[in-house]
Amino acid sequence: FFQNVALALLAVGVIVLFTVASPGAAMIITLVVLSCIIDILGFMYALGVVIDSVSVINLVLAVGLSVDYSAHVGHCFMTKGGDDKNRRALESLADIGAAVLSGALSTFLAVAILLFSSSYVFEVLSTQFALTVGFGIIHGLVLLPVLLSILGPKPFSSAEPIDGPTEGKEEPAKGKDDEEEDDE
Image 1: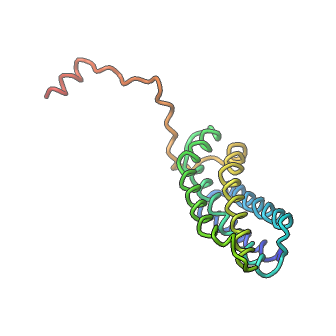
Image 2: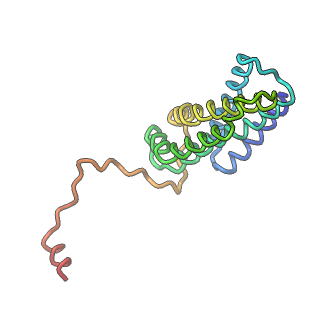
Image 3: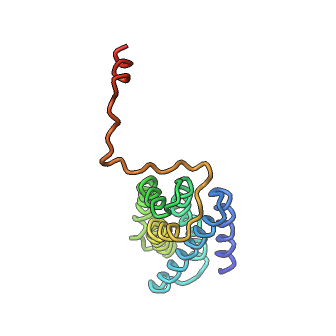
């Protein structure tokens, strides 16, 4: 059991390293996924779900599902320029948070009907998927941005700087030369 989950986490770490292209961000994302799996295991115990072949398969799937939420937020964080990690985390959530939340909701709705099943396999599957989506979204949209704002790496060198606040700024007044060019 532990070997399967550890191998899945290792695969996630390597793939995230290649897709996010930042060792620091990849490590933080992998730790967030590990934290999510630990939480799922704890709730499995609390709900009386035993570790058997069905739950282990679903746990390995949970690794893959939970990385999805965190990887999108982590990659978006790396594309935000500037030195203010808090602002980069906030802008990342503003840009991709709604899409990640929509993806989680659609995944939950896809298996929600199975929560009412009387089949053991479907009961375990739907319970673990609900836990995966719930914890995945909490870790991806709450824990990860906090960790990135504290420990996050520098942005990609190609990252666009975040525009400053535009409130209170007025357009520069047109001079006489600008008005003459508009008339022509």
